[in-house]
Amino acid sequence: MQQHGIGKLLFAALAEGAWQAGVRHWKAVFLVYNTAIRRLLETVGKKQAECGLDCGVVEAVYRLFPWGNSGSLRKRREMSEAVAALHSYSMRSSSPAALITR
Image 1 (tube, rainbow, N blue to C red):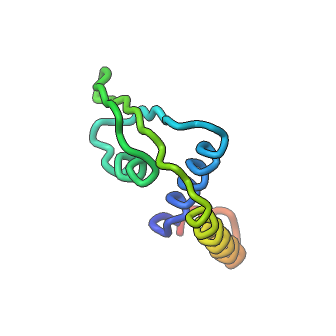
Image 2: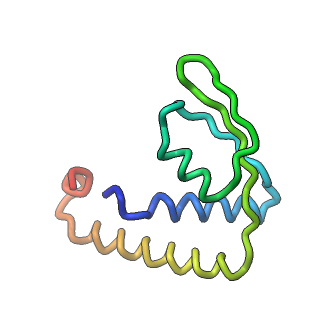
Image 3: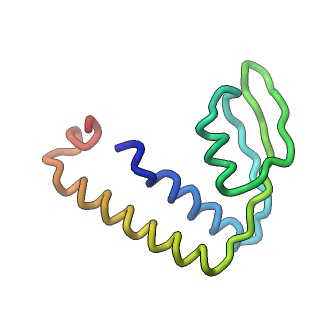
């Protein structure tokens, strides 16, 4: 159940909620070669600082992009559609194990 964009939509919704709650910066700790998380973070903010920690771990600070009302409505609609698709997919599964292995 990967590569359907649901995680990206959830991440965007989390960033939007953080912005609305007054959060302007996120600190992320991840493996230095994890390019997927770097790309994901760049969809919701601009990197302000990064430093290497021990054992190939990086700590980075991202300034969140402002969330306007027009983007919010579109994101909510996309999120609703993604959740409906996930629910439909899970209802077709005969067991929880089948859902995990697909």
